[in-house]
Image (cartoon, rainbow, N blue to C red; front, side, top):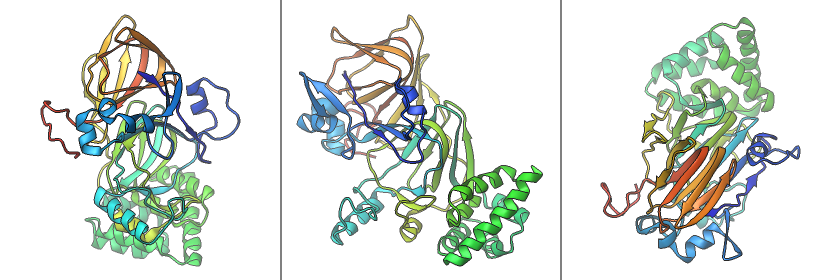
Length: 411
């Protein structure tokens, strides 16, 4: 196993303490938003082999079948198809959605054809791949995620009694299947500046009254107030009224499929995703917003919060299944005196979030403390884990040749 040296991202919304605390280092007062573990070309992890430091992406390209296995290489080429992160949000992230694979391919090709530079801040598509993702909470985690049942949104808007929202109430009543949600989203995000500012202020004023009364919809109203305080005049603040609000407890997870409109609000979690950087934003950010492209990829079908049903693998492992082949996430809770074996054949990233692990392979032992992570090659011998720790294990769910369900193609 290779111990990983991982980049830390410092977006303004990040916590100043959570990631430094995980890594066992002193905070420097600046935000630390994400810890990336993987081989994404924008910020790959680094490994040391034979005394020389390489990026994990370089190591994989040099010998993909040993590093990834034949099935992963055959389906994805010489690249790791998943990216593991620790995300630490002290402030809300942008309201955003990710494209499907076909949408990403079309969008990437269009921007390439138009000559949009790869580092252009107005670019939406960094690559031609989809970006489904899963987040498992390490602390209490708050998010907006998808669109709630239309009847519930109608009740909320009727409670608000803001006259400027009357066209939206009418659209929802006539289109409860999601077509009404799309019309409302389109109208709100295309409002002229003066109308938008006036609407956000009117909604905020009424939300303040609901919060003060501490009655029905006070929670949703408080979220609007929090967003409006940080992003005054942003139409995405009002769009939050349409969305599911979720609070995850530690160990709970959500899966975000292509087109799911979402915004992480605050909390710390482990996130795994397809190794893509395609993000289309609707607001709540100083970065590039592309309303028309967002409306082209967003799924406005109402539905419940997409909670992941945890599957117990055994007395150590619980799994968070995802309906994609790119990644699979497990949580390991290893007690003292218990040895746990990981079979070979898949690329894996192992992250320790509490305690300490020893990873033994073919007579060599590597220690991983809290905040440390390692990469296990598909071609490595079995790995035996000992210690007392809580850890997350990310890999692909693509079957290896000979396993049930093996097809040789990515899902």
